[in-house]
Image (tube, rainbow, N blue to C red; front, side, top):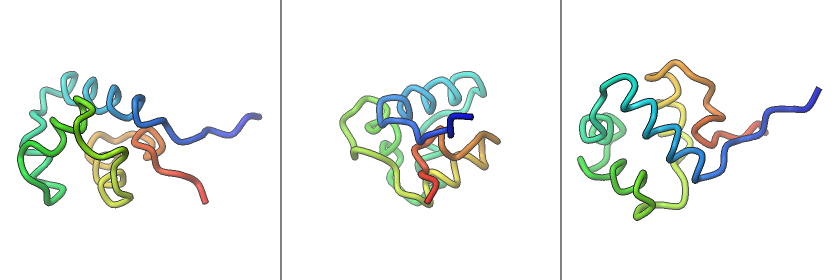
Length: 77
């Protein structure tokens, strides 16, 4: 069986965008929940932010949306 690999930054952006929309969760409060400014995740989704999310941000978002952390770029080490 082929192992599941971590998502690319573009896939992470699309995953975050769709999960937030599907769950009707604005990105500004999510940004503040991960300890960032209110426009952090919005910039990230637009591609204007960091290349990828930090490990603790990946874990938080995965738990928040109840999905596999690899969808947010977490790598299996």
